[in-house]
Structure formats: C-alpha cells, structure tokens
Length: 480
Image: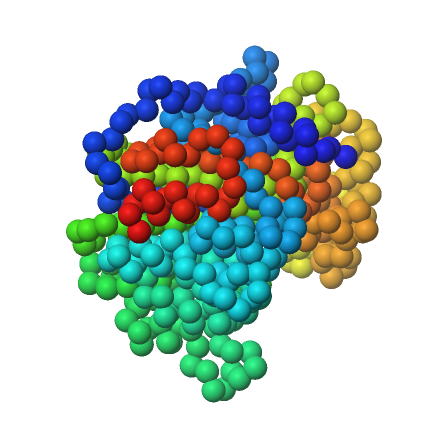
C-alpha cells in the first residue's frame, strides 16, 4: 500500500515542474479587491492534480505534464488539512476550516468542536459588508462544503436544517444538484418544504440553465438546481453528461453571470464537488475529466481577472485529498493517456449494463465484451492480457442475474462506497492498472493539498500553511 510519503514526493516533483514564477507576479495598485473567486476542488490532492496534467499532455513516450490554467498562477503553497479531532479530515470539518478560519470536529458544519457555538463564514462577512454572494457546487446544495459557508449544524446530516438556513442566509445565488431533505422527515405534513419556503422568501427557483437564462434579468435571488433522481447526489459527471444535462460549467457560469447583474462587489465560492466522488470510486478517467472541467471554470474567472487585474482575487484550493491517487503504481512507465478510451464513469456503465439486462435479458459474455470494447477500448485500442480477460469474465459471471446486475460487492471493496457492480469495478481497475494510476484507499487521506492564487493580495498564499489561514487571509485582503 502506498504511503503519504509517496504523495509528498509527487508534490515536490510538481513544484519543480509547474510553470510558476513569483517574480513575474504583478504588483497591484489597490489595497482591496472588489471581486473574489474562491474555488475548492473537493478531494483534489496533489496526486490527482499531477495525474490530470499527465493526462492532458497526452504523450507518455516523451513524458511531460501540461499546465492547467490555475497551476500557472504566480503564487502557490501547501495546505495542512487535519481537523480538530482527526489527522484525516472529513468534508464538514474541512469546509468549516476553509470558510470560517477555525478548526472543528468531524461531521460538524459551521460550529466550534463543542457543536454549540456558531462560527461566521467569510461569505457571511462579505454579505454583511454589502457584497453579492454566490455559493455553488456540482453536488447537493446542502452538502458539507457548501453548507459550511451559510449553515451552522452540529452534524452534517441535518440536511433539512441546512436547507432552511440556506434560505435564511439571503445570499444572491445558489447552484448545485438539489436538496436531500426538502421536507422535515419527522414532520412532513407540517412542513411546506425548503423549495416552497425559498420561493416565498424571494428566491426564483429554476431547474435548468435555459430556465436560468430566461429569468435571470428580473430575479433578485436565484437557486439553480436539478431535482434529485435515482438517489444521486450530484449533477452528471463530465464524462457522462448529455446535452440535456445541467453541467459544471453551466452552474458556474450562471452564478458568475448573476453576480454581475448589478454593479458592486461580489464573492463567489465554487466547489468542484464531484472530484471527490470520482476519487472515492478510484475512477481515474472520471477524476481527470472532472478536474479539467473545474479548470475550465477557473479559466473563465481568470479571463475576467485579466480585464480587472487590480480589482480581482482568485484563490484555488482543496478541502482534503481523497484516496491517495498516485501517478505510478509499481513501475517506472506511465500510460495515463490510455484513460481517454473510457467513455463512461463506473456508475454510469453499471446503470447502462443493468438497462441492457432488463431490456434484453441476461446478456452473453460476447455481448458484454462488445460493450467493454466500445466503452473502455479493451481488445481494440487497448491490449489486455489473458489474466485481465479472465478477471473480467469472472466479474461478469458474478455480476449478472436474470433480473439485472447485482449491486452487492465483495469485502475487497468495503473501502469505497462509490463502487457499483463487480464488472464495472473490475473494468475501471484494469484500465487504471494499464494507465499505471494507483490508489491508497477509497477514502480521504491526510496528505497536503495545493493552494494557488492570482490577483490582489495573491502573494499571501505561498509556502506551507494551515487550511484555516486561507479564509483569514482572504478576509484581511478584502477588508472584511
């Protein structure tokens, strides 16, 4: 099993290769910014980031990493992520640290470790100063990280309470997947629900980007979300998205557009929340496409910065590292670009196979091989050995029943609660092995995460620091 030392070594390599030049940073002519972008890549550890850069470069015959937009920012540093009670943080404690500047205990949102004393987030401070505020994510709006910017609950699973506190915050924009508990589960008949309450409180609630565009001119406050379906917890992964789906870039662009509708200052926190989910599932192809989409959102903000260089601050970081993703899994040869042959996330491929089984009956091994070829490139673009083919066939035999696809997994997958059926799991594992992408586990790890910054006050974000220093530095730069 890999150690955290491995992740640290890869980070050192990254620092040597990244195109960062502090000497070239522009000295800004004003003290305080008017526009702040705060990007949080949930679970985006150093190994995940370097793996994405190898993938983007696309050439392992002459190994190199390709820069992302944010890796070229002039200032960068390391964050320490432990919570107040654990060396490996959860998202609630990490989100609270990044939003309030205070460490707290696991599963606690916006409160001190006593789970009684509320903390004030940087978003709330901005709003109290008259700034327009947007909070958006690719996961549920009431998820732990976005919740830490407006809510105060002793346990992150108090999601109905979190949703009602979202309405009370009166921030101008919220975007994401949806609410897990629209109505109070203990008193559903007595509760009108979060969405109805939000509408009565002046929010315009819309379910698509087209609807947002239609109403944005006249709305005072907006909630953009896709209603939950099939017990999902996020908008579709980039690798799975169809033209009909709400995408990461649409969520980001809606919030960015809306915050500019009126003149004045704005604070925008945007979370690439599904990066974490892909890492939990050890799904490297899905992970890198999520980080690339996240980077595209950052590039939009960076283009805005280039038009307002003396008024804008952009900070990009992560709440924690997930699963210890490592470019290198026991050898010196990487083949990371091979991940481009995967056309679906593990979860989407499992649903696809289940739909085939339900529609056509129990598929033959030859039928399943066709789907593995189309969606992973096996036997066609990717050569697999007899042992790998045997493993796939065994997983096929264990996964399919006359009623569909089994969802239960063996004990070797207990780490990872984003796993699905054995065949999809095995296919992803094999393409990871061929790419030479390794994983420590299927859960969070305690490794460093990066921070990158450009704009007014960006020079404050360099070197090693605790995660709680980031919001404090932003608040001091902004004059909150």
